[in-house]
Structure formats: C-alpha cells, structure tokens
Image 1 (cartoon, helix red, strand yellow):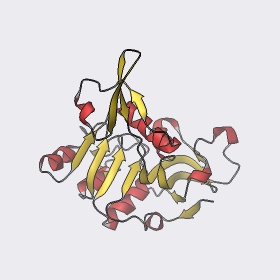
Image 2 (cartoon, rainbow, N blue to C red):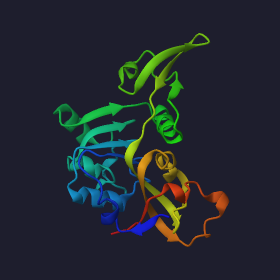
Image 3 (tube, rainbow, N blue to C red):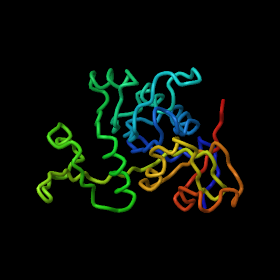
Image 4 (cartoon, rainbow, N blue to C red):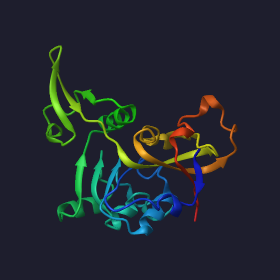
Length: 228
C-alpha cells in the first residue's frame, strides 16, 4: 500500500545520477511540491525525462515553474524531452556544454515510455524517417514493412517517476483532472519508484472504480500538495 509522506521523505532515497520522469506539460500537471523538495535537496547529475523543461515564470508569477527549478539549479545533466523552446536556460546550458539535450518526437516519446511500462521491446513508428531523429541513441534500427520504412524506438524507463493527480485516495489510486493527465499516466507504469503528488487526498472509495486511471498498486509514495 502506498504511504502518505512529506515531500522531503519521498525524495530522500534519490541519489546523484538518478533518472526521473516528470509528468505534465509546460509545468501544468507537474508535481510542484515534490519538485521543490528535490530542488532544495542538492541532488545533481540527474537525467530528466519529460515533455519539456517548463518555463522561467509560472502562471501565478512564480519564478522557475515546476521542473524549470531543476534546470535553473543545474541539477540536470541530461534532458530527454520533446521541446525546450520556452526555457532559454536549456539552450544556454546546452551551448556551454553543461547540459546534454536529447529531443524526441512527442508521440514517439509517449509510446516509448508506454513500451517501457508494458515490458515491450520497442515501438515501430514512421516518425523521424529521413531526419536527424534517425541518429538518436534511442533508435534501435530501421525496418521496412510492406514497403514502408519504420524506426524501432527503444523502450524508456526510469528510476523514479514524479506524477501529479487531482484526487488520490489513501491507497494510491489516482484520478487526473483535464489535461493535467499529460504523461503522468504512462510514466506511472515505467519507473521503479512512483511518487504521486495529490492536489487532494481522499478516502478509499471516494474515487469511483471506473474513474481510477492509475492504480494504487503502482504508487509507492503519496505527497500532499502544498500551495505555499
């Protein structure tokens, strides 16, 4: 059963060099309280796997919104993402050689994570054929099927996943609200340790069984979101 802990307790086992998936899109759906604790921990040389690097300013005026805190603190050694244009610090660190950036097509990355979670050997996709995508470390090979070329993209997993749910019950079952579901659901399947941050912690049974998106058996720790 998942444990309800503080953000500091949840990230206590994360060491330098860990790989971490972060759900969300431009900071929306990030596990903000847990990320803040990680930013204050001093852990470094992380591999960050996420849709993007968020942005320097959040919708509420907060500096370094969501995962942007980790980029700003230079805690990330390698960033695997689908776009980074909203965070100029990514380009600056990449150009100075302190941050490795790997850009993967968005749909491909989602399916690669899904493959990692389901134990599949990879994903066949025509996306990226004839482009620099073919040279990515995540491409296993190129195949021709019925006369059409495909790239076999390797599955992706991580040591940890930071996910965020609108409602999480005390057993760890998660319901996502709207588009905050972005990447959170597939990442919860593809990490050794899953830390789920709840906008609202509710009693077991308050989320209807048919509305559970991520099952509690996948969640190792529950963190209650703190607004301050």
